[in-house]
Image 1 (cartoon, rainbow over the protein chains, first blue to last red):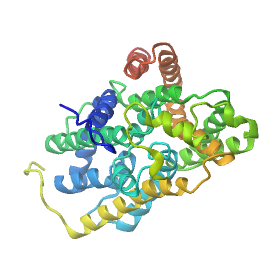
Image 2: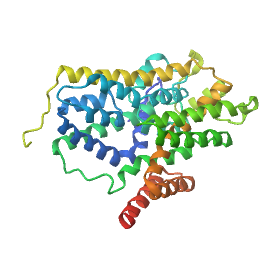
Image 3: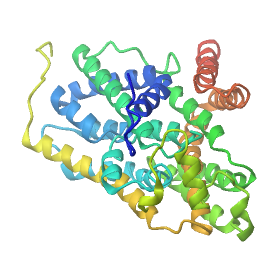
Length: 266
Length: 108
């Protein structure tokens, strides 16, 4: 448990990884149950457990995996499945983009290693942290969720049924609740009001007019457009914790445990 | 249907399909980050990028709360209020879930 104090640069600090994992603890029951439901579905669609776990750890995206496993047949419709995965996971372009402050000033290999285990849940938990610049925190949550997800898959696969209906205990609502609660932590002031309203309205319109997860892109797109339109020059100093002032932000983000100095360049 | 579960079969088609899914997904994760790195650090685009996580998050849960009906909306409101008051993710989540579970049980 002793932390070597001498190492000047730690990108994935063990302590930070552990804190990231603990922060995702509330998501354990619902992730486990939905993992198990996917495991049951996989037995019906003819995937082996090994293939399912391989998918869970390489793709690591719940909603895309549900759709893909559901489409799985004796002769696999590979193109359909890959296209469906791409469409459902398009939001990860936006999620990846929003992680810029987390990876600020880190070398490319940290980004390459840190961006794989990024699910909606650990991303959202990470983005509400006071100190954003911790790729280890993000990774810790991802590793934790990956283990829980794969464990759920295995349990569901081996039982092949008899999994409690998530709806009964409102476990299906757990993800909605977690994301709603985390939104509170993302509030940075009145500048957020109009973009957020636009996102809510855009996603609702998308939900009732577009198929699948396009509503996320519709909402995010509406939010982005309104944010771009409502920006004014003088807004730059209304958000003290923003990444708009690079030197200050880098110091703030890096201070408590990000011992990494941004002098090495961006 | 009572045969022992298939644990270790890896067909080539399955592995290739899964790898395709994985490459596409990872490519978008990393691609989004690398694209954002090329955006300016200040001004309009930095401002937009900072509004992005909230906009994505809202777009994820608002439609699912509404499509869960009145009890879903009530659950989301309870979650948000609890979070504002207590500032604890687990407490806020439980508040919403208990309300939804109770609502389904008693009104269902």
